[in-house]
Image (cartoon, rainbow, N blue to C red; front, top):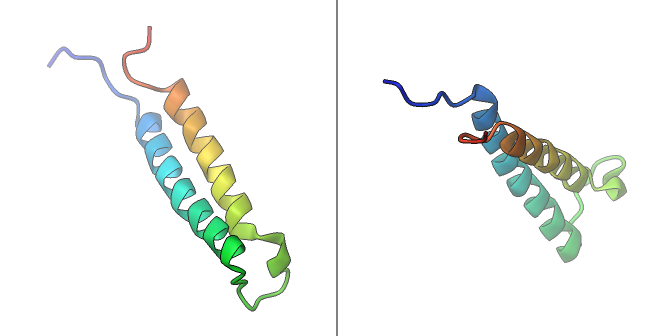
Length: 70
């Protein structure tokens, strides 16, 4: 097997991106539909922020450690 090795960080980027899309998507849907969880500080919309953070970090890893880059 003489192919190029794929970094584990690329796969971590894939997972973070997928989780970020799911969490942020759920947060945006809840925000648009007006459904806020009955918890303290619900008006801060934590799923939107957390999902956006995961998405940004995942995209960073995907770009930085993509296979086949020179």
